[in-house]
Length: 109
Length: 113
Image 1 (cartoon, chains in turn orange, yellow):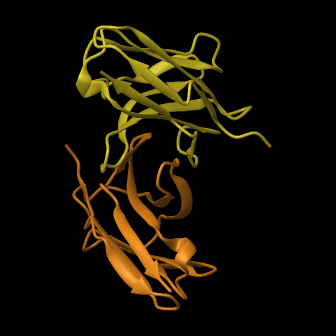
Image 2: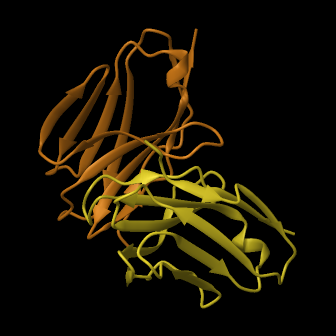
């Protein structure tokens, strides 16, 4: 069973700080990686996807991929209390997504 | 436009009861996925349709679970003889194509007593 690992947290950061969320995966052949945000009691919402090594930026969010180390991260700049949620890392395996358990982020004022 | 919709949003079932969960994908999306999310866990894949064809059902936990999408649009996930361990949120996702972005519905929260 191919695996996606995340620290469950909670990760607590002050408002305005950078939040760094990390994810490792077991299948060296994986090509497509996704970050979803899930508010309590709600469904996952796609934040970013990344396919190539390096950084991909979208507003306050930056996804980083290192295929050699089998490592994906999500940076959230200028964190806001509204960013408080669980962040799910997912890897595509053929057509389906394999999710990690998620990291709970808490941004305090 | 309308997103993925699911019904019912909440379902309480007695152990041994059969349940049916419905998913309406985004219009035009040919791929439809079902996931199960237990409390404190990430979603786990159950099954996947491309139009009306069920291409992968490797994640269905037992033969009590059955899914269909007869006309390539609405899908139903049926659980027969529910057990307490079936209690979870059942998420449906759809995408334009097999490897396009998956968009999730609000989920059906199933509680088996």
